[in-house]
Length: 337
Image (cartoon, rainbow, N blue to C red; front, side, top):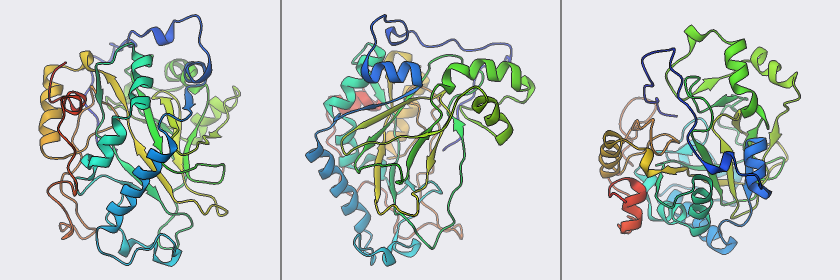
């Protein structure tokens, strides 16, 4: 993840949670109950499966557009030489791909937007400029990433500030790679930070990584890790205070994971400075963090190889540009509601 925005200079100041009926409504069932009480939820069929399958096809077409010998049916071709540059967590952030048409089409799916509108109580939302994940199982050419439990919210922010999302374009079973969460950890986060950490070590970035001794404090209170399972077209949600990480596929998995990260927050929460930053980044076809309204720091626009040189396959614009509708431009923060 890209570096995060600075928070208030005074360490004695803690940012209060965002106002939302989601936290206080008396009747709360289904995915809303899970999100509030467990800190994560799966919204079933947020996108019709046939459309989600088409987004996966477009993602595969994009990956094949680099002219390599990659063959999705031949595991021996699932190697670094046949893939554009990925992060260690198998996400694609470069090549202007975050603004490919299929990425924005998925971000604008009614079922996805309606879900976040229900959470925040408004249809006037901003979208994050987030990544595509394609994980090939049982690759032999890369070192497997271990557990890296973290939250994407600074200790200086308290309560609900951000809900993150994953649009599932492939099935995600117990053995398949994908999101692993610690249900209920969001409810204990304030107590943990205040009693188990040294405030002088807190950082003003929206990230906190846990070591094993810190995780044991949660597990001693009955908080155990759970692999989130989902089907094609489902929307996975989690509170940024919920401990989580992206797990790698198990040895039995044959599933190529395909997922789009997408988060939304009310546009009214963004400052004019933030909107200007989003507009500038959008103009460069760049990406940011999981946060739509704050914590806006651009990821590298250019894509570099391990030797520090720019990838000759790099692009200055998306392969297929999105349609610049009012809806898209408002979600991007370029136009005002």
